[in-house]
Image (cartoon, rainbow, N blue to C red; front, side, top):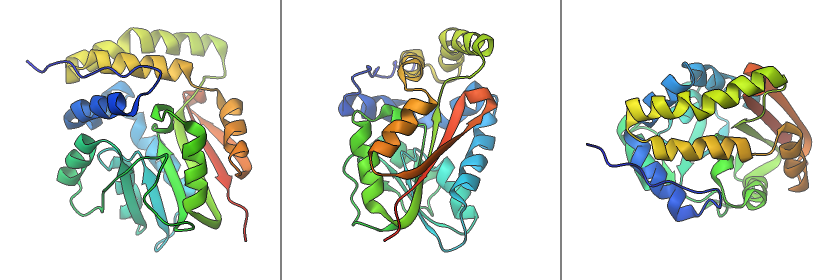
Length: 236
């Protein structure tokens, strides 16, 4: 029997969060597909389109996990660098996507020089970073002047009745799916709590702007279950 994954708490201690993701890495992509009804695949395409990628563009994909999000950019001819701070996720990613140049690194202290990337993106990972402001500042630092950031993250459904149904799903159905598919219900209990504790669309937009990004805007996906935030670094 698979032992339960260590459970991170809302203080988001880096060691706890990394350990949790190390443990769920082998079945992470399958679990995500089933929990979202395979919508996560459509959201990856929407994120790619929001970045506006073109062949030869250099993109940093933070919290890339096993590289499923990075695969979308690589297949479009983009020079993508997948980064994650979970050794287990990176190891699994190298098995699934051996051609991608995975890097182990922390979103709050990126191992890259200033002005390196045309765009930085992060999907469902900013919510797991202990210091959101530090991560947003690091994204700004490594982005070239005139470049942009795209953040795909779980958010808050805008229609109250739908929001109530969604929160009920998070509390009941999601842990059941995680327990059946991955035997990791405790880890996904953290997922439920972290989504409900996360700022809404406007609050996150304000945090992005406070880190120096301009023209901050967002687009809701599936009624606001997920929101895509996009912002630009001022041109030199």
